[in-house]
Length: 169
Image (tube, rainbow, N blue to C red; front, side):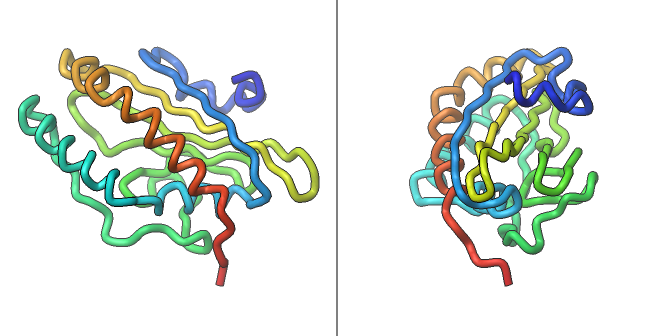
């Protein structure tokens, strides 16, 4: 978290947070490749978890969000605030430095996913991946505590997928 706090413009995402999670991983890919690899990772078991999530969403009466039609490649990953990147909305981004997104508007919680790149050497980067959750309704903590154990597994495996080199055309 100390490295992320160097970027004061990111402080706004941590204010009034109910849950903050930071994980780190190192790789020899750049920020654009890392984030697009994370967002494009969707194995069968994750698809199954999302199906279970749909049941929880129905029971709690939450908003159902459309699945993205395309998954971002490094060359078309948006860094423009307000634009979509998979099922996220870009909120702040600086090439080779950080990328922050938000889940679509919902009534139960607001969540941010961010990645901050720490250059270790000319070919090695440490990625600080953060998740911030802010509850908006009583259903927020109920929903998040149901998915929390899976959240950690999903984020970690997405991070591992992000470390793999992908071609930029």
